[in-house]
Amino acid sequence: MAFGGRTYVVSFSALSATNGRLVVLSDRSIVLAEANARAVRSVAAMVIVGIGLCLLVWLGGEWLVHRPLGALRAAAGRVASGGLLPGSTSPASCRSSDNSERASIR
Image (cartoon, rainbow, N blue to C red):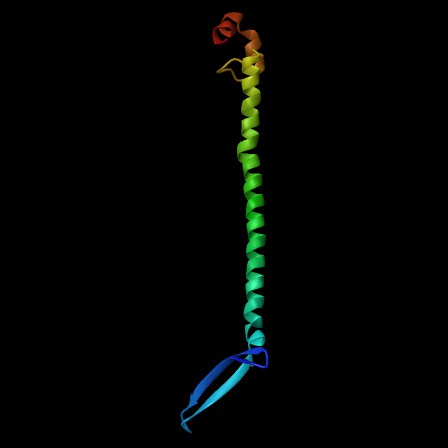
C-alpha cells in the first residue's frame, strides 16, 4: 500500500474480545531491513567459503597432481636420455648394467 510516495506493509489481527480488528501500517524499508541485512551477510559468507574452497582445490591439485606429474616427467626424461633404466631403483644401478639393456629400450 502506498501513501505519499512511501510504501507500507499492512498487518492486521482480529480482536476476539471486542470483535474488532487491529490494523498496523509499517514502513516497508524498516520491515525488510533486517531480512536484507541477513541476506547480505549470507551472500558474503558464501563468497568467502567459495573462495576458500577454490584455494583449497588449487593447492590440493598442486600437491596431489602437479608435483607427482613433475616427478614422473623428470623420471621419463632420465629414461629417455638413458640415465635410468625401467625397473631400476636408482641411477647408480643403471651405471653398473651393461649397454645391451639400454639399446633394447631405445
